[in-house]
Length: 343
Image (cartoon, rainbow, N blue to C red):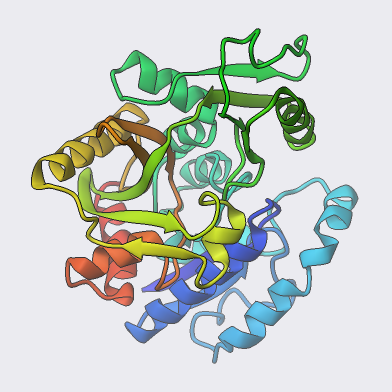
């Protein structure tokens, strides 16, 4: 198949997206697909849409080209109105399918998906509605609470609102402050004092105008991929220091990941059922990854959903697929076939 692997973009997760995209593109080409890596925001002015899928493709060169724009994104945003870079939509329209390797805002929030729906361009992952619902952690929390998906108690704070202390808001320490639409744990703070709480609000509001404050759950952390509505094996995430923040996600050796997680059969089935329920409540499609905490009393809490989870051979979802006997390249193929079948 002719496949555009769409990566890059303008979010705080741009660099991670380029890594995901390059690994997916490499895997798909190893399966015989005519896959090309394209930066959704920067595009390629010198690309021939008619021959790009058959011309020799230098993946390393393309990654270097995309990465060369990393320090210029803000400047380019000020200079033009369109989110889509030169020839991006033409390339996507010429492909059999677009593999979305985007992470974060303007990629994982439903806007790209809505554009492709209107243009009739098939793509991987959830549609625009599920993507938008899952991207906003405040909406995710509301839907979980209203539909019986266990989740930590929390409230939504707006920048325009009068800022109160954690105690006035009904929270004890430690508690969690996080941006509503951030990703890769950017803008997530575990606070232990009123001073830290006030600073977390200040830092969080520097990213977005809406924050989520929720109770802190002490215990073990897990993640579960759900593909085509069915939960994959559970992976346990145990950071050596601190919590599963941006550094621990992407710095080699900073986290111990165990898959399948060491849980009883009963607890495993229960957490997988909750993951599938959360997937349905958020109107997700094709595949996603849901994150969990479990306290010392085995109470489970679904934190959020990732509609376009990281896609490198060592990312969480590929590790879960490996337990099922599926290689990284096989998983990439499966995510495409599932997405095309359900469109």
